[in-house]
Length: 432
Image 1 (cartoon, rainbow, N blue to C red):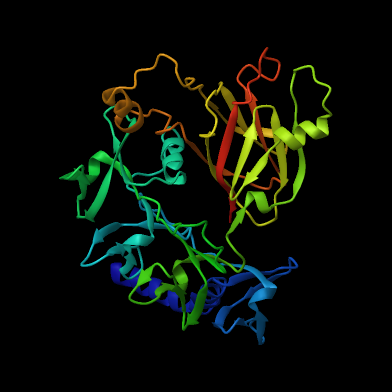
Image 2 (cartoon, helix red, strand yellow):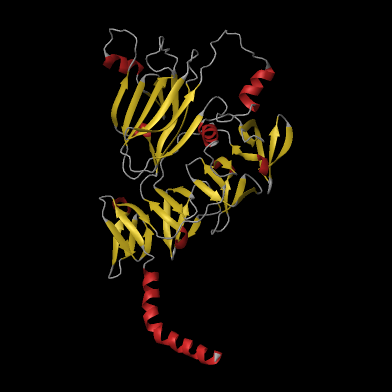
C-alpha cells in the first residue's frame, strides 16, 4: 500500500512540475532592483550589469540601458532585513558598521568581522566609537552625547549595576577578544567587555567635519558605508573606503539593501530656513527684528547656538530619514539658568529634554579634586553624560519641516530671563 501511495505521489509531482517551474522562475525573477532617478521616476531592473566611470548599466529585461550616476537618486534591493548584531562601530567619516566582533591586529589596525562578509581591516585612527550593546532609549542620550562632543582623551563608558553609565578617560591600547586594554594614568587595566557600554575615541587634532561622501551603501544588517568609489563585479558591489586597509570591501548582491547616489549626510544649517524668531517677556522698545538679529539662532561653524526664547524652523529636503545631533550648555556663558529644548516635526513635538542650571563663578561650590572628579569623570550618569551633553537620533518619517525651540524652564514669562540661558547644538544633521 505504501509503495502504491508513493507511486501516485511521484506521478502527481511529475504531472504538476510544468506548472510549478514557471512559479519558481517567476519568484526568482521577482528579486530585482528598484532604481529611482533624481526626477522621481522609478525603474525596475532585472540586474546590474556594470557600475564604473560614473555610469551604471542595467538589464531591463528586453534590453540594457545606461544611466549616469548624476541622474540617479538611489537603488533598492528587496532582500529581507536580518537581525543586526549588537556591536556598532562608528567611523569618523560617518560610516556605521554592525559587526560580530572587532580585535586589534599588529600595528595601528583592527580586524572587523561582519555577518555575511569577509573579514576586513580598518585603520585604528578612523574609529570614532565602538558600542557593544544595542540601542537603549534610557541610555542613548548619554551615549550619543558623549560621541558627539569631541574630547582630548579616549573614554571608556562603563555600565554600572544600576544601568547608569560611568565615563573614565585615559588612553586606548588594544582590543582583545573579551576585553579592552586601557592606560589609566600610567596603569594598564583590562576592562571586560561585558561590563562596558563601549569606548569613545579622542578627537584628532586635524579632525574636521567629514566631507559628504558620494555614495551611501547599506546592507541587510543595517551597516552603513560612506564611500567615494563603488564598482560592480559580477554579482557583488565593490566598496572603497579611506578607512579600510588591505583593499576594498566586497558586498554580495543578496546582502545589499540600498545605495544612495547622493551624499547620505546633510548639515542642518545648510538647509533652507523657513522661519526663525526670538521672543522675550521683558518690556523693550527694541524692534523684534533687531532682537532676532542680536539674540536669535546663530551658526558657529557646523554648530547652532540658541538663546532661550529663540526658535528656528528648517525645510527638510526629500530622501532623509533621521535627525542626529547633541545639545549642551554653551561653555562660553557662566550664568546659566534651567532651559528646555524641543524638537518638532511638522509642528508636533517629538523629542524634548531639560538642561539644568550651573553655578555662577565665585559661588560656594566644592572644587576639591574628589568632588570635581566625581562630577566630571566618574560619577554615574543616569540620563545625562559628562558635561550635561544630551544626544538625539530621531526618525523624521515624511515630515517636511523641523523646528528647534529653546525656552527657560519657566517659559519666556519668567521674571528675569537670563542671557546665559544659551545652548549649543553640536553638528545637527540629517541622515539618509
